[in-house]
Image 1 (cartoon, rainbow, N blue to C red):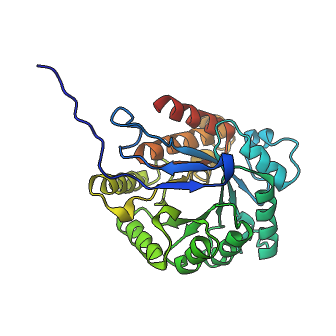
Image 2: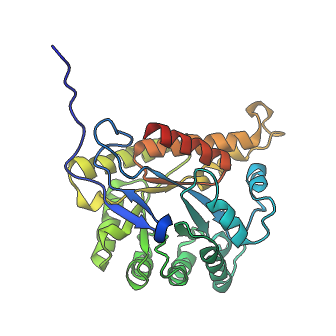
Image 3: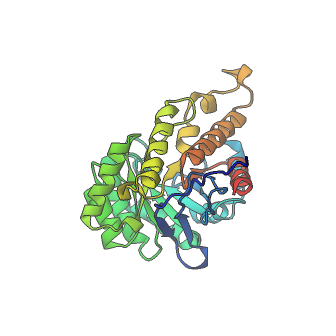
Length: 313
């Protein structure tokens, strides 16, 4: 007897979130099937790729990243070049200089960087903080104001500061809010509920449910993302139907496989190749688990993941 395949299309769907303005605006989410299950139903909005840059410039970047931006002398020029990277859909500006344990730039300096990037590009923008919660609370509020009218994602509001960051981004300045939790479906859902209760519409929320480089507790990432996507589609859980965005670059380039020099670990091969390998394998894995967007930084990684997405869609 003939085999009749059962469709994996769900009645529920992931919210569609639009980021950016004009012809270059992008949409993420909207699917009602599992990642890349285009054989069950069309996926209108393919996963998107962002390129991470920082307000500290290129000093600490791998050689291949520096080579790509050769000739760029200002942050605006770097941002414009990032927006033009083959395979890229958006730019992510990380306000790394605001870290009080690092460069400890003033808020005014950080906001000057935001304005320079906003003025330089016409593609969608994500603005992330320095990972110091107290400082990010101030920086991300101000960034939402400086980028007013550009429909950016402010990444991210956390349990500790969601009232301030989400209210500024999602209500006062009509930006998109990134809700950041740590590899736990219950924490992710709770934060979405809390942000929604502030008055931020679900269509203005995206989730960063946490990530790690492959091999570094990545099973928690897989479990969380799979469970979020399954609950959103299979159980029609509206508090988990926000699209997921995953910052991969920071995790992948800050593990020993990417940081150990060739002098220290000659048997591991070229250092930069290892970093690219970590970035590509992590990005491919989170996309397979349901991420609707990933943030990378190396041109080779962006090209590889872009090719993967195109061939699977």
